[in-house]
Amino acid sequence: MAASKKLIAGNWKMNMLAADGIALARAIAAQGDIPTCDLLVCPPATILRAVAEAAGGSSVAVGGQDCHEAESGAFTGDVSAAMVRDAGASHVILGHSERRHGLGESDARVCAKAVAAHAAGLTAIVCIGETEAERDAGKTLDVLSGQLAGSLPDAGVDGATTVIAYEPVWAIGTGRTPTLDEVAVAHGHIRATLAVAMGDTAADIGLLYGGSMKPGNAADLLAVPDVDGGLIGGASLDAESFLAIAAAAG
Ligand code: PGA
Image (cartoon, rainbow, N blue to C red; front, side):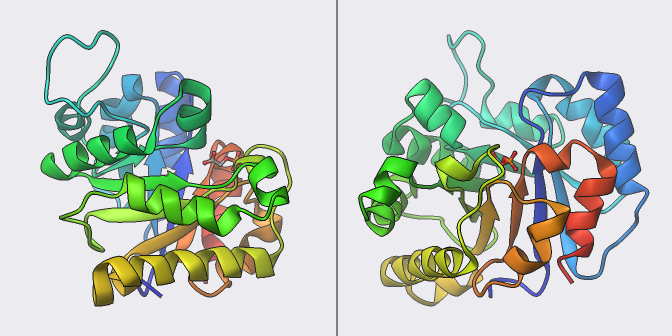
């Protein structure tokens, strides 16, 4: 296991105006320290600073949902890694399937973004995962290896700078999850692939499971070997369910 504490990360996606996001961050922060896990919330870019301020002084960390790979320039609508950091974030989600499949983000682009995130002092949460067709075709582990090889920078990847989130595309927002054995196989394969690439450092890298994690299945998913935490979408939009998942990390 990468760390003694699990990382429970909320991906708010394109939800929450300022008032609701601040209230949610405050409700989560009010829980206080949880000995068994670290908490992270990833709001939309427009309210990153407000949420970071609302969570300020608590142990809840804040992350962005994406960043551009360039330092600055003519990229209308984008935010740089330094901007995400400047707004109060310590982490940034990269290569989420809604960007890979919805917006055509390639492994190479995700890799460039990870380089930019690292340069800005952000921990990159690099998402990988197979589609249902790829799973049905028996290609899951090959897809994961390929995404790891293509999405991770050649240098600067360690337990402090990088987290991997395994999110089967077909499990995101669907209420369906892989079996615990399938999660164990995927996470074991990711750990082994990282070990081939970077040796002992692989053991320090947090591996999150994401895709329809809820209070009812979190304890089982988080107990799978090599699952070091969760990346939670829908169930992270409510303090009670997010904190119930965190409580299940014990
Ligand atoms: P979900 O989303 O928990 O709503 O399935 C997870 C994610 O997309 O990160």
